[in-house]
Length: 299
Ligand SMILES: Cc1cc2nc3c(=O)[nH]c(=O)nc-3n(C[C@H](O)[C@H](O)[C@H](O)COP(=O)(O)OP(=O)(O)OC[C@H]3O[C@@H](n4cnc5c(N)ncnc54)[C@H](O)[C@@H]3O)c2cc1C
Image (cartoon, rainbow, N blue to C red; front, side, top):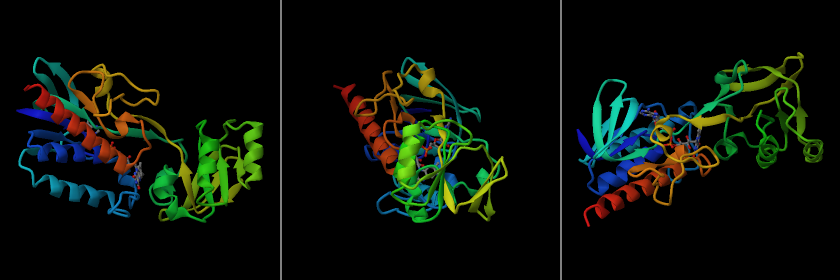
């Protein structure tokens, strides 16, 4: 089957790209493995008109909207491989389908790896989160922890202070903070725990505290754990796309990558903070880029 554009990834970036291309009457294939990045969260925030919506509900509404446009085909499959052809791109799915398209948008997002700490998954998305801008409001004024093994720990701690003055920074045994940073945190009333962590504990998704390997514990009601982020798919690298300093696929203002016919949008480009609204906007931008380039080929 041949499409004007194939989009791999049906998060907000891919969904908005499909919407814009469908509205431009382009034939679009949206291939999505249906593993949204924010699925762990009970509610997503900061998306105007959708503040507090469940991630699954956001998707349901988007699918309903896409169904109004006859040139969009949504396909719940996992893309396994992409190759360049004379006329564009060929996409193979894990399930054995083969699709062809003139243009390709990569919207496969990022994946997160967290420090291996017992109990983490019991609280992630309910009282532990990765992004303070997304969930800081829900945790405001509570006793919080920031668990980070990343060099950004000092900066993140100072950000979180805006939501709660009762903050303990836990570096899980890593010596990440300079003497000057430790002193600044102390001056702002932020405590630091340098010992390795044994476990998060609590009940039914509600964090109650953190136990350290030296058997000490601290009482905390919630917090943030900083993940290590990496590309969810290798399609950008495989096709030879250039990457930016943040490890995202480099694009111009219309989502064009360094490889002709390949566009990228959303978290996969990593140039902006990880946000639903930014990913959706980037999807729209890449779709307009695709539409403009397809039109230019007819001049
Ligand atoms: C726990 C959590 C909570 C969050 N809360 C918020 C919030 O409240 N507000 C906010 O603005 N942001 C929030 N975010 C960030 C937000 O989820 C991301 O910025 C946003 O989802 C990025 O959109 P995307 O379309 O680029 O990628 P994603 O949403 O990650 O979507 C990528 C899609 O591509 C699919 N995919 C990947 N590889 C393939 C493949 N090979 N074949 C087919 N499909 C594939 C995946 O299944 C997925 O559906 C949160 C993130 C997390 C982890």
